[in-house]
Amino acid sequence: MSIKGKAYLMGAYEHPTRDAPDKTTAQLHAECARGALEDAGLGFDDVDGYFCAGDAPGFGALSMIDYMGLKNVRHMDTTETGGSSYILHVAHAAQAIAAGKCQVALITLAGRPRNGGNRPGAGGGGRPPQGLSDGAPEAGFESIYGGSTHNTYGMCAMRHMYEYGTTSEQLAWIKVAASHHAQWNEHAFLKNVVTVEEVVNSRMISDPLHLLDCCVVTDGGGALVVVSPEIARSLKRPKVKLLGAGEAPKVQQGGKLDLTYSGAVWSGPRAFEEAGVKPADIKYASIYDSFTITVLMQIEDLGFCGKGEGGRFVADGGLISGVGKLPFNTDGGGLCNNHPTNRGGITKVIEAVRQLRGEAHPKVQVPNCDLAVAHGTGGSLGVRHGAATIVLEREA
Amino acid sequence: MSELMTRPIAAPAVTVESKPFFDAAAEGKFLIKRCTACGEAHWYPRTICPFCHSDQTVWEESPGEGVVYSFSILRKSPSGPYALAYVTLAEGPNVLTNIVDVAPDDVKIGMRVKVKLQDTEGGPPVPVFVPA
Image (cartoon, rainbow over all chains, first blue to last red):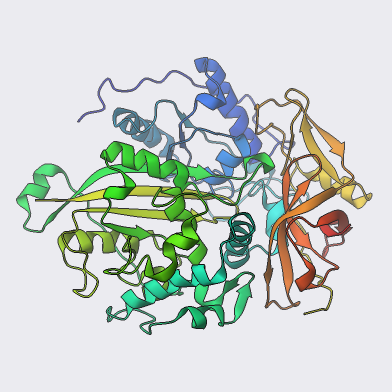
């Protein structure tokens, strides 16, 4: 597939300022976005693909999507190659449009090096910022309150319990299932099988999450190789085919936030629709497990059970391979096996590949595993995050 | 766990967009942003409305009344346990904050709270919330 003729540049805007002491970088990004969209005859709500690079403040795309109130983004790209990033973004946007991943891609750049903003190279430069910051636009209203992964995810769990009657014992079953799987993984950081009682009696870290509701902290890493069908046919390994993919940001929505669901409510259906399968067809699921509550919310949002029914779904071994309805994280997941450099997305894909190849540990291998999902939440479930879902199939 | 929670807060990062908010806080006023084009209040405050994308946003003084939407108490920190929370303001938006001057076991979802502008370490005061 070529991008030739598949995409058009219909809006362009250069901000008139050359010295912006009275604006933030986030504001400049937004003003540029508005200018380019107006030039094209489009509005912010038409944008379904967002591209930015290292000049975007804070959490990059997530901070800017939040600041600008972009509601309909289903494709993001933050490829950073310095000054050439935006040319590369045009090419990536065309690829995304050609692939049907978005229809209106917005690319922004902005900065204030004359006013104390970041300036590439040694020594920085520009006038002193008069004690003013120009970092993440949300920082002055968020980072001062001591938000961490534990307490922002804790707030999600607290609200889920309040709205749906989810219990600590139900959450504990998720750790129990991961530990049942981890016992067979010789590399797992935690190999001991735990009980519901041990989880709920472990030290409270941040209400209502206990020590054993949390993932491990591990060094390590992983890598993946994705190839063309032609290359795949020339190789000797079992072929794992990407059937569908979906992504979505979930941000604070100007303060209209709802902590009971994740971005999986958007990324999941996109991935399943592209794959042409339903959640009920899935034989194995790698589900991001930074905390037990992360798993519970995502399996609801992906449609493996109804909203608010996650607690009953995971209880009594619902996620244990060979026992429950949905075998998950058969490597022991982030909860017991590995969460390398606090980023668990890659290990989610790796275990899904093992399952589809039939190369998971025999004690946890799902019989005839030909269809799997890998899903992740990055950033903070309780503040702003990016959700990603992929559907994978073993090709006979 | 019956001791009232307090939490020392570092100076916030103040930008040219947020300076009016923190200048007002230094004078004892709690401001929010409202868009005059669509009428919606939003949080955190910014120049461009996150709902209708108009730049016709204005500062508005708020009595800072609301209810706890959710919270989590981090049990171990150098200054003792503290409550991170989202508070739903009467004007609508949810605000990320700390709940202070309350015992850990007494924080509940739905409890009524009111803003308190707390001094920071070398910076302007910031909004935290206390039981109403």
